Length: 550
Ligand code: FAD
Ligand code: N01
Image (cartoon, rainbow, N blue to C red; front, side):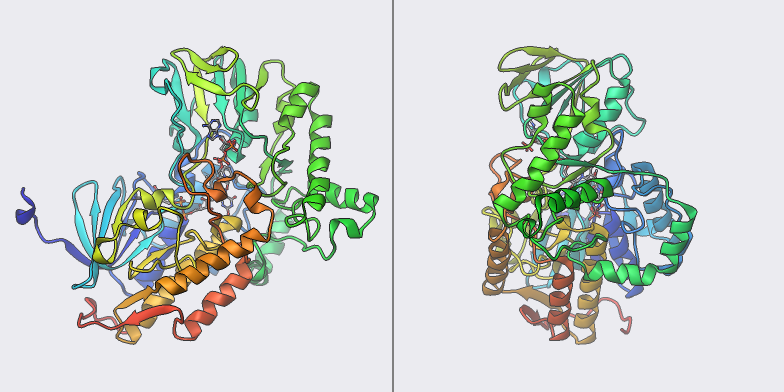
């Protein structure tokens, strides 16, 4: 059919892209508002992160009873988490339960990727295109595409010639992978590597881990949840959730009052031991208030971890290679593990330090580094994501005057409050760049964004407004504010995915907002209460398609 013969696109009020925790909740809230909504999702089912990342050992590292929705008290009370840190299958079951309990599935098109979204400044609506050729027009588009959803497969020369099996942790086969008797290579030692390596080692005949950068990882101290503690948490859930919303990261933990050198060396060591024993994400990097701003203070915590590594790993050369040295603790995303360091004491596990012998190519039979070839049957890429902007850049998003988002953000993301970028009216990002997003318990941030976006749409509708945008001046100020906060910390010193450093050619910009979840929520709420200051609201001669009164 030629384009002139195409049937007219379906008109809806809103399109949501993605059916992870953000997309599911956004659909629920828009439906509550009476908006006709279509959701498109590349995957075959709901769950996002938890649909794709099925590698052995995948689990959350924010406690299950905090890493879950808070919007429904009934849901909160009826769902029973079994472990302190739930496994991927359990979290996926939870996502499915939510989608069925709230009857969300009927509005979601699975196995459908959104390829483009073009704004029509005369009709004041978006035309969204999918890979199935469908076109839908919508007043609002909400990008719930995920911060960690665009898998990063490095372009290593020869990769296509490998005759064995290649897996990426973020695209793991649904029926699992049996490594029994196999020689396995794992490339990458971030959270996915650190979680999967001990379990792959249990099966594989030989495991070779290729490490470019050593990560700081703490024991997760995962365990089954006790009935009493579940009951207690459920009884106090409202206060607990409120505490998370007001906290800096949405993760329950004590905040330090003192700097690392305001205590004796013994007290410092004892604080680090307490953090090490806690199994709480980020506990070590926040054990003292100056660890993420003072290099000298940070070094005391970093050395504490190195000592732990030296005492856990029998071979001193391997132990030294596992010791992170070239970036401050906490400035790359911390990891929680189960038996990670001890795994290197197994005789069939070896570590290859890519700092001394970089990978040169993938061969038919394995991985060739600067000094030799490692023959393997399978390669696992635990190489992470094109984080925060990757999934958005994959879509051809065009705002006013045909401006492409990927061109606008060529030197790094720019927007106001991480929510709206100038020239792209009525297009929202959930936990997008320049919001706290990945520096938080993301369930807390997802709920806050979805609720803000929903309230904003309700406000527009109530006031007969059709468009929300922002200006270049406002977003410049916000973008600079985000950068300024980061520059007052040690974060930019690490070549992290927060900085885009893991993807060749990506601009080096610190993308998440470091001002804290609680403070950010207050800012967003104040902006809304003041009539959306900093945003440009306009009313155009276009009627709302639906007549639902708000
Ligand atoms: P996602 O879950 O990533 O969902 C986005 C969805 O959008 C995906 O399903 C994707 O297929 C779809 N999509 C993207 N582009 C398109 C398109 N063009 N068309 C159609 N569909 C599209 N965070 C925490 O706070 N605590 C944790 O313990 C934690 N553990 C994690 C463990 C792993 C292994 C990973 C990878 C991340 C973890 N995270 C954790 C971060 C996690 O991504 C978030 O917590 C949360 O699940 C994100 O939900 P989301 O809906 O925003 O995005
Ligand atoms: O990815 P990563 P991830 N050659 O980017 C290496 C969340 N998450 O999937 O550090 C060789 O952290 C890379 O090296 P370097 C969490 O937010 C949570 O592990 O760039 N190596 C690094 O070692 C996390 O932070 C959990 O030098 C290459 C590794 O691959 C985020 O998702 C579990 C390379 C990638 O580490 C991403 O984690 C999993 C190359 N060309 C994920 N390219 C929980 O525990 C990259 N690397 C809850």
